[in-house]
Figure 1: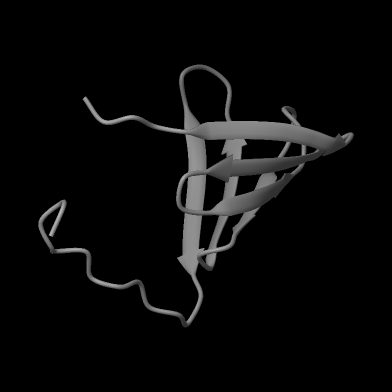
Figure 2 (figure 1 turned 45 degrees about the vertical axis):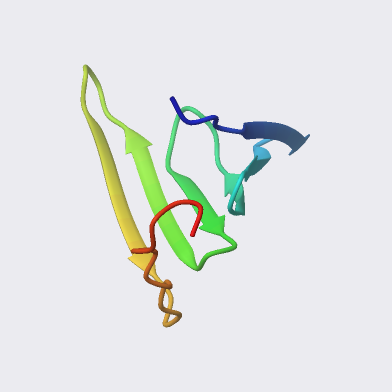
Length: 75
């Protein structure tokens, strides 16, 4: 089972710094309304909780391309 790392820090009311093993991101917004996330990898996400078990999410990527990680682990 792979090990994962994820940590979130609330830096201001409505602003969260999220750190994981490969990148970091800033999330703005609260629980009752739209949230916007900007990642260090160029990903921008807007999401919102809807009534019931529903949610809405839109993700956009910047012009940067992600490297192909097709190599075997450990080589």
